[in-house]
Image (tube, rainbow, N blue to C red; front, side, top):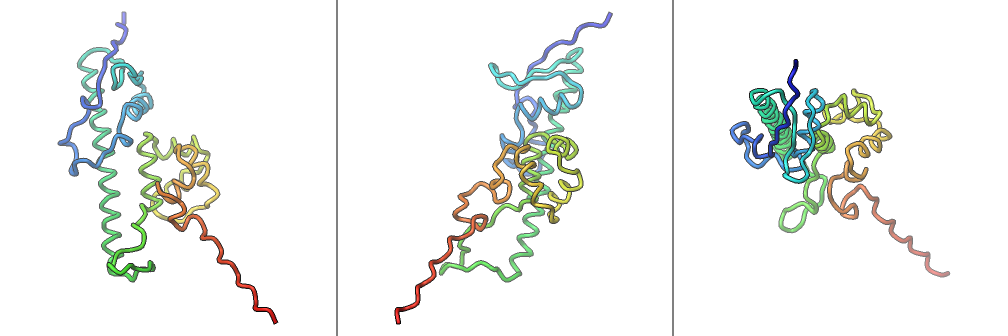
Length: 205
């Protein structure tokens, strides 16, 4: 007779090991939280749910030893998110180093600073939002109806059909403008066209 599985409880602190990362503070609560963990466990065949009362999450396992394996799997999940974000960080930093040697199209202020701070690249933002929700590329493609190849092209910084982005934004649970331009006021960025200047009337004859 097979014994019924036991329900175990764990907090985010239980599955967070700072030794499994290189850069402290890189993983934010939106990147790794009980919802992300529960989705990961369910996708791998483990019954789990968010524990709203006690915090953290609950999951089932046959015995304490297997429960410890599940917790370590969650530690590895956080580590993979940390390393993925770190990889994106260094790619962005490497791109910024190249950009420092290129002429800037932005007009500069008297103190040498750009008029607006640089915006997170769309490719990095799409990747970050997908990881924060615990999606694999295949899962995001299935839920959004967007081809896997399109998502891979987007996250690698290659051009994609902009008509695909509204479905991706809806699946990633952000407004389309936030996916395109980041969390900022659109009036401050080029995502909203500047109002047209009034055309002066010709002087009367």
